[in-house]
Length: 100
Image 1 (spheres, one colour):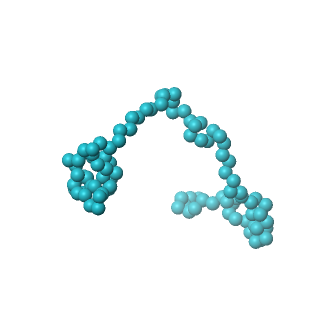
Image 2 (cartoon, one colour; image 1 turned 180 degrees about the vertical axis):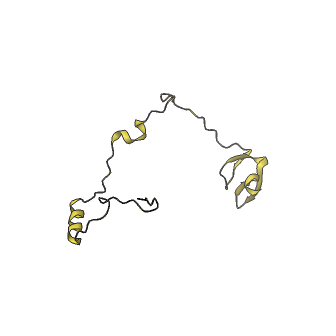
Image 3 (spheres, rainbow, N blue to C red; image 1 turned 120 degrees about the vertical axis):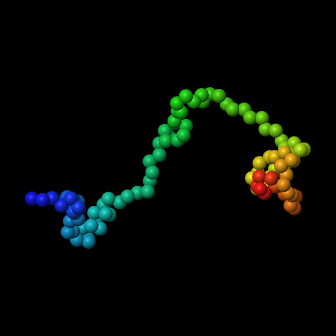
């Protein structure tokens, strides 16, 4: 007997049974799904250790305020030297890269 490989292969248990609407609704109501998500304390980012990471070390960054010869671009919000100033409009300054 030849086998048609293009024909969908459906097992008898995959086919829906001829049940009444009341039986299907009763089955659904008995297996109600809740929207509760199980969250464990180990699911947070603190529960993961990165390989090769030194977690005891704190990074210290010294923040330097904007100097007199610098400005903050109102388009890219980066601090540039005054030589990068392309235009100033209503007190807002824009760098040459954004105006380019």
